[in-house]
Length: 318
Image (cartoon, rainbow, N blue to C red):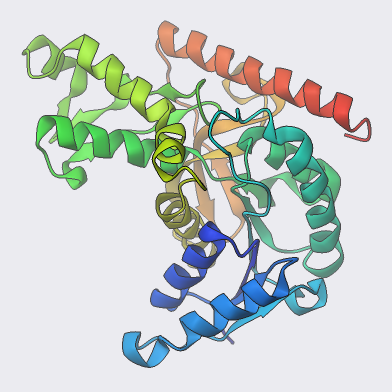
């Protein structure tokens, strides 16, 4: 029996997710969208490429949660994307309403699924989703750190003229402006980035600029596209998480996970390295942080908490 992945939201990310999952032959795909025609059209279009690309997965589109029943993985992209000049926080009111409906749908049809949330503002939406759905905390997770880390590694590779696979790095904390680049754990071809600064291969100022560009990575793309936001890299990141779960890979990935005392913080979702396997989030990896990193991580968590308090004012049931 093939596994089943439901994608809630058949927009740009949803369609790209469906295509990547099919190309990897990972699972059957149900595209769910309130606009059933878009979900059906995209599913049919991708399915028609199967003889060319040689994959064998079943793709369907729907606007009925019954068709998503007993999904192994659910990836949520439903919501309004950012428009130019819109902050992630502006999105909050609109996307909370949408997530509440999604949570109901999932709870009723796929209570055992591993749920990955991509909808912004990420950390708060994933926390709201878990509360609305009452699904186990280790089975509800947010995609952000993989994307931010990927952007950071790409920018570094361009700057240092080094292939991306020679760079190891990741980020912690909230998705967006409060993200924390783990410079202490960043290595280029086996060398610490801090040593490269000492050797004059890259200046501290230039590195800070790259970190800043990473934080604003989404906004930069929104500005170029004018209508819409990033979708290729976010979709690739979501698929990596789904694959880890379905294949029990036990890979360490930076994700927005529920913290219960780890990193000195409780009852909040924030970006940390986790091990994903068939049990969902099987472990939260606690790293030794420098005092700078600790302080920045705390600021990041505080900003997520502030935004969640704003969400509670919008919907007192949270």
